[in-house]
Length: 137
Image (cartoon, rainbow, N blue to C red; front, side, top):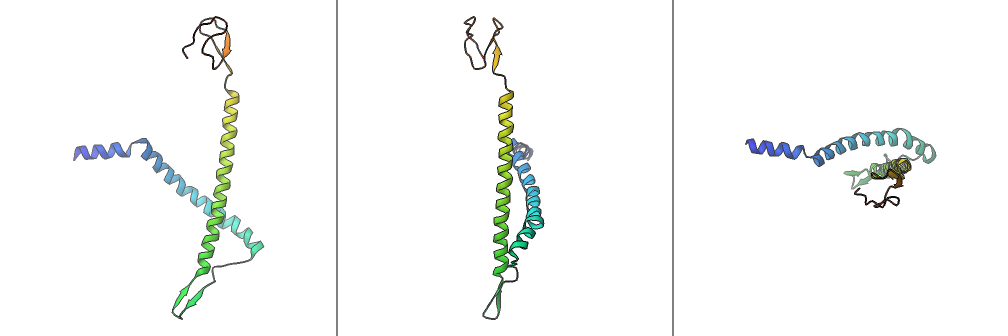
């Protein structure tokens, strides 16, 4: 039993399991943010222009069963709106990430110092052009 508990602890403490757990938690919180954005900001604005509310659309089947296809249409429209909002957010984050990576590349040094003759050489040089020493880095 002791080995089983240790094995389970090792499994849970592995990096990828913890990363996945954090991703699920962050995803749930992000879902709430996107849902709030769609429900409280985007849908009312679309409602002003469209004026359509599909929730009340239904079909009476043989007088006994009611098919609420309006609720389904609303769910599909909300999904499309949410997917579009998530797309825009991901696109924005990717743009910011690229800008930060470009800034980091610009801040990276273009030269390094030769450890033998102390002259400046290109960062990717494998041999010093001044003293012809072979660089191990």
